[in-house]
Structure formats: structure tokens, C-alpha cells
Image (tube, rainbow, N blue to C red; front, side, top):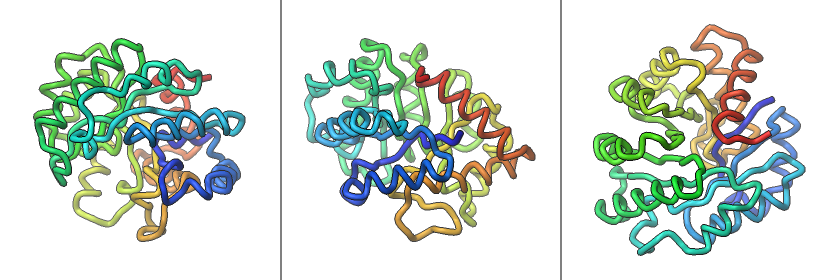
Length: 256
């Protein structure tokens, strides 16, 4: 079984093709997919889609992306009810993104902290979006060490890996691990050294298409390229990696 732990089938680019995308993914062996929310409306749609396509292995996460932080003074009150839905298994994506700074840093930090507290209150794991902000993120996360944390599209390199692992963090890798770039080689170094039990795989569809599909619209079926490259870098079989990631995802998200 393959698992895509982070995709945006609820995005404008993919929602109209959702059924076809899910069917293609399942034909490629992807039996579980996590649809991730980025704002209130997006999160509501993720939760609804996870119910509509529950028979096809869809789950959801609800949250406010750091880019959208300036639009919210608080966690939407409706999130408390949505978080209790059977197929909603995580809070996020939330975090800090200083690469684009679409929202002021203070707003990002405020919403990040609110998400972490909310995740603790509803006893759900948290999906983190951290870009060019590891120092500030780790300082905030230190106060919340008891949370299950998934670093989506991990980009902290070896510099932060031990600290992340010390918090019990999981790291998810996407299409970037297959690219022919300097930063991707750094990422592959992480993939070779991280403990197997801390690895998850994702597409971030419709973004970050893997080689040889870079530049095209990404979709969950393409997570197989991520698995293949990680297995190659670690010197293990595709089947061995898929079994390990399946176990890791079940342990982290608590799904069957």
C-alpha cells in the first residue's frame, strides 16, 4: 500500500477532477490520501470530501496556512465541531513561512501558537509548514513537545534533524527529493540518515511534481516516484519502504 500524506485535491486546480485523480491513484496502489486544509473554506471542503470519498481511503486535516494568517483573529469556532468528524485526523497545515511573507511574521506566530494549543485540546496530530523559519518554529514547538508533529516537505536539512527527532517529529518528503538541484541533494542526505520510523511520503499535489514530471500538474498517483527515490537512496526495496511508511502513517494518524 502507498500513502499520500499531503495533497490538495480540494484545491481550485484539482477539485473538479477529484474522482478521476483518486481513481488513478488507487490504480497505482495509493490506498490512503490525506486532503489538507489551508483556510476555513478549504478545510470544510477537505472534511466533506473525506466523507464523500471515505470508501476510497480519503482522510482530512483542517487548518489555516501561514500565508492566510493575517485573515484570522482566531481559530474558526466551527473547527471544533469539524475536528470531531471521523475522517478528520490532523490539524494543519500550520506554521511559519518567511520565504514569501504573505502574512506578517507576528500574525503567523500568533496563528501557529493557536493551532498548537487547539491540536492539544482536541488531541490530534499537527501538520507543520515551515519554510525559512526553523529557528522561530523550533522555539515555539519546544513548548508543545507532547504533540505529534509532522514536518510536511521537511526542509531543515541535517542542521535541525536531531532537534526535530528529539521532539518525536515525523518528516514527510515529496517531489523535491527527486529533483536534480543542490537543495534536493541536501534533502537526499537527510533521507539517507533519518530513521526509517520517522519517514512519510507525500505529493503536495497539485504542486511540486517529481521528476520526470516536473513542470506538470502533480497528483496523488505520482507519490510512487517519491517512494522509489527514497528506497533507492536508502538501499532498500520499494516494498520494504512502502510497508514501513504504512506502519508509520497508521501510528501517527491513528487510522485503520
